[in-house]
Amino acid sequence: MTVYANRFHEADVSTIESSTSDAADSAPLLEVLDLDSELTYWRNHYRGLIDRPGLRYSDYEPAVKVGLDAYMRSRGRTLEEMQDGIGVCYRRTRGASRLDWDEARTVVEAAWSRLEHRTSRP
Image 1 (cartoon, one colour):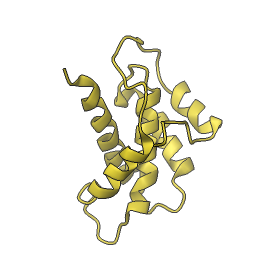
Image 2: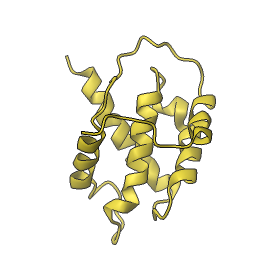
Image 3: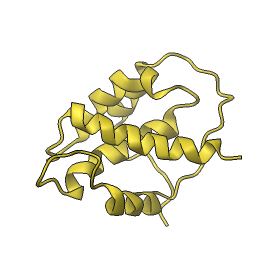
């Protein structure tokens, strides 16, 4: 099991954090994330997020990781509050992914939403 750890350069992380407003730290968030388990989930469920033939999981993975990382750093902020910084981070870290930011945003939102739903369960 790989426990969540920041995998982005400090410049990318600071871009996400500096582009957001201060938010209340009181919102419930996951404190620990089994990254291996989460990536396995997305490896098995990425199809259908983007309707474009020929895409592979390797095209989706950078956006999944950015979404997971952003959620874990959100400290109660919403995805919308962090959107600009997340986009910049994705563009810097996407590597060979064939997803542009408009497509990757859908994947980021899905990864974020999955974690958000886990914290909202009673």
